[in-house]
Image 1 (cartoon, helix red, strand yellow):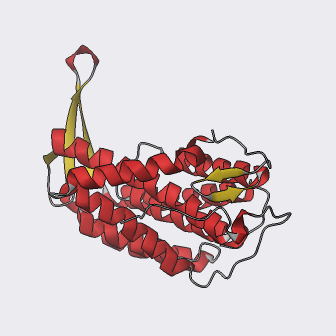
Image 2 (cartoon, helix red, strand yellow):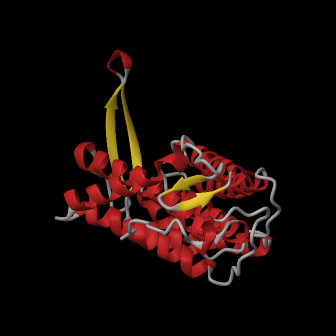
Length: 268
């Protein structure tokens, strides 16, 4: 589970820095897997008998990180911002909140298909790479936990929604029918095969997005993974695969632009 974050205010990281500290990025992949595992365990736990306990844990973590997500923390007497014991300068705090807000705005695109989970992985890896290279270690942990918790919260809401209103369509999709104006009904298919979702997240968690051939190979592998789902759903598979390719490539550009907009040049 994602554990509560508690650091001493006397930490060396609470001292104001005039410049960003470069950090060894060799463990990014392991850190990213751990973040996804934490979020995944919370989501999976909510499905089980521990639903109430895990929901409480998720809410508590979200509350502790809410000032990063909302950007409403108050500066202390020294001009720094303290988030659950981790100190940010004004510039660091502004950059972190903008990074999270812009990333989450890009994720909130009403995409209910499997490409949505590719987008999750791309967002989390680019943010993980960016924060590890450009923030102090405890700040990077805080920012990445804020993002992973927000994603876990959104997925929990989707799971509860499907549990309440969804009807299993096939091995890959759950359908929800809603009543629109003038008694017109609308049915939306939600990607719901957890094994396939996990494979997609794992795939894009390992991509070097600055290497075009690596990205193209990952997209080709993704298309192989989702083809059975699209076929089972009687979709126009070739069209959907091309649309997914365009969507994924655009998301890589969007998230890279979000990072670069913070004024720090990085190599993902």
